[in-house]
Length: 251
Image (cartoon, rainbow, N blue to C red; front, side, top):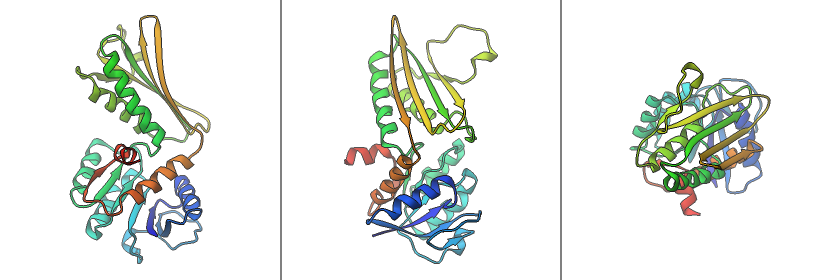
């Protein structure tokens, strides 16, 4: 039985993870951390320093501002961590990489296996179509999402970029300039509205044909299941930075 410490337990994803874990027999939440108020079937603390329980792994679905405290806690206690929060700045990503020298750390911009599969498909398509197709990424999320573009859209762009021989630049804002589209670019576009859970589409536009690779998230549960599976996957792993690619390859 894997013992989980849930950071951000009173948030939307925290509630979903709590419900998902309650239905499983291979793990349990032994404590939670959240600055907000709420009710839970396990002890909840305001800060990590107050936590009395000794978990096997930490799952974080809180806020990028909490990163430093979380990394200090897990590296000191030598606890594996699943960092599922989105919206990290580049310098914070570097801190995650440094922490992975000390502990096994799982990080993915999207915890859905499906999204990570389409990233692999998009990379393969980019290699085959390079030079003859324009690449555009469109992402759509609910009207409460703060960061734009989504971390997943950037992950898709980075995965595609890594697959190309000529590295593209990203174009986020075409309305500010009057010029034809640069062949060596990936356009990234954000839509915010309603209660959209998450939609991502990679468009390859060529001469007289369009190829589209897309993923549609219909509930937050799929992200929770991905994070829980990642937590179980980390058990017994050596220090290092792990992602959905390793988890998928193991299946």
